[in-house]
Length: 597
Image 1 (tube, rainbow, N blue to C red):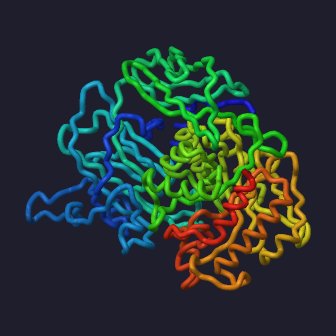
Image 2 (spheres, helix red, strand yellow):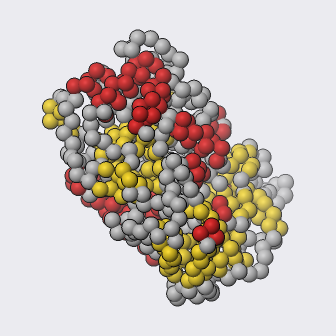
Image 3 (cartoon, rainbow, N blue to C red):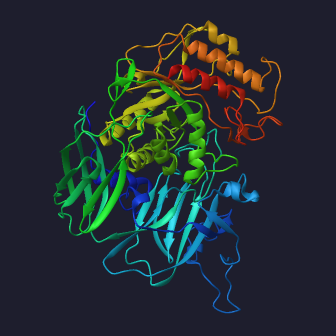
């Protein structure tokens, strides 16, 4: 597998322009830059009829809520007021913040006021970690641009647009589901709307390091290489890369486009789940220093095994949704990420599948610190419109934003491009284009997607998906014993699987209401789920697998799950309840993974 993490400013803009407007190329490593947080209380107006955007002829109105208009006198008519409206703490989803908005899908306007003092020769960027699903962004009444996709970051340059003194940002957020969206209208998780991740102003000098990539050179353990990308008038300014712990330093002089490559001889200690070693890297350009902690490792697939740092590894996985522990809603901070990941570690996992969309950056960074390998995925889920060119461009854009944000996270081993998509010629072409696009950006990682099994006969399952020949790792979801027969069916399976590529069971399991007990053949009890896991891992012991990934770590909200007194709007397949209580099946996986260590 050749290493090919390339500079994509031209491609990024051309793709993004079809779904987004006026975006500045993504600035990376935001947690280690100089920023001003805009988190906190924002005023919000629920706008079910889009009154704040359209006039009565359904044409965009010049009197929209983005103007934050105030009555000029007591006779003036203004039919909205951010000042008189409620406040919501951002980042947060509105469904869990306001009881009246639990099921709401549509438009909500958010406003943030703040004082600012721009400094000469400084550049400023307005950064959003994520907004679900479509965001129209305004600064001081001026339209900045838009972004579609609820799980990836975006930013606008606001140099010259911020004023000395009072400023206000207004964001029109719309989480309406669309058939041609990514994801589409049909999902199995809560459509949490809002500004769900951090908002901040990024401060940089006129010329600054916007992006970079650094890793071990392909196939080498004694060379570190990468590239840097400068933005600004002095794009030829030299950039120094220093790894003090290794006593190494390299200097790069970028080309006229601001891009420069480097390589230096060094032999770092390798990152692994047993030893999650990171090295602090310092980048210096035009008097500005940027630091980042980097994990160095090699990952590859050879035959039917996955190798980490030249040694075969069995992936002891668990799937996770971005659902906050102990409460409903999206999690939005490092502490909640650590809680979820600590449960995975307690279960003896060395691998997490972050389903079914790119998770908060806190999650990826904390996983790397804690020694957990990561599968990161875009929400090409179920019944995507595979014949729609705009849907494809939307998926490509989300894929790029995911990769560009997280390409320096050594813990990430798999880019996943889809989940349970029905096989068709149109689907195959769509996903083939995504595979090519991902490898065109970064082929230093493995490519996979969660497929579905087929049957030759009732007890002979196999995989017939033609994309098996395209991916690096064959992954599929299998609910034998839950949607497919009862748990004792597991013992009767005669699997016929290819042996030329690694195979991961990307989902398996079944539901149980924590605290509901009964016979092991009584569905929804902890005993039924426990027995299902006992039977499943016994079946896996007879298969030649590279890893398993139960569905799912913790119960999560889903409007599809309607059974009263059991589901009540929750998918109950978690091994941990939404209150943080471990079910009996959790300990089956913990024991089995201990044997697999």
